[in-house]
Image (cartoon, rainbow, N blue to C red; front, side):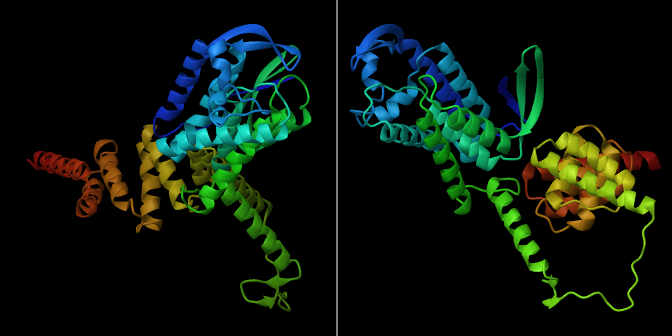
Length: 406
């Protein structure tokens, strides 16, 4: 059975120039160094893939040179070798580049190449067989992706005999079980694959990414691996505390009041509560995967079931922006209004006021509400372009109002 990841559910916010550059550099060195021919090493006849002048840059575990721990990662043994390495680098590296920034990502990639080379050399110190390829560095990048974006979805192409299709798998499970456990632990031993370099790369990527999150050198989120582990630990601690009937909010052992009567819920009420829980859970899951479009659809269903439900502020703001981008002004306006009602002190409140003013003025034909929100925005906006947009819209509304009165 073939399992091949073909895309992820997120895209970088910034153009990952460094990742593109690394792909181009690897392709360039492959073209100028690749020239397969047979050679004898340690009494063994092997196929040497590189031109003679380039062989000195391969990593030889038995007698390594210091520069080989870096140069080996820019050499490849055949077309499929570089194709798969660069495809995986493109698949996972773009978002890691976006997360770490250009300088940080380049440093991380090169360090991952060196560390994976060291891991391979230590495990095969007596081997005269040269090692080459970016697989270890790519494994480091993939390990970092696991830490930064564990809940995103990876679309996987599967091929089982004549059955071909795709499935979506959370990145955490695909990378951990397929790429690490299955491909590099259970399947090791066959072929000329540097499994230990891969595992060292994964370990480096996971460890460094976790340290960056813990030390806050890189901004975290509610969806990274560190946040997931912290939530799991809180739930575990809470279960331990309440297992004996202890109420952590009062500090006393919880007891049921004498004579207290439970209020029985109707089947319709229970069904409604279950639907609300399912919808909220689905919304959280889609936002974690950065599938905001689907989260917006689920939010509208939630509002149909119970329009008093309130989402966390960033979720609600993301969904409101998504609805506005989908040309759903009425639904977007309602979401923005709900945001202001519950999170009026948020740092983006003035931008929300501006958006509401524009929606009411340009799409919903409600000039009174438009003027109210635009005036509120004009008092707080600091961005010159946004201020100008706000003032221009207010001026247009005043002109239209004068014409209507005339």
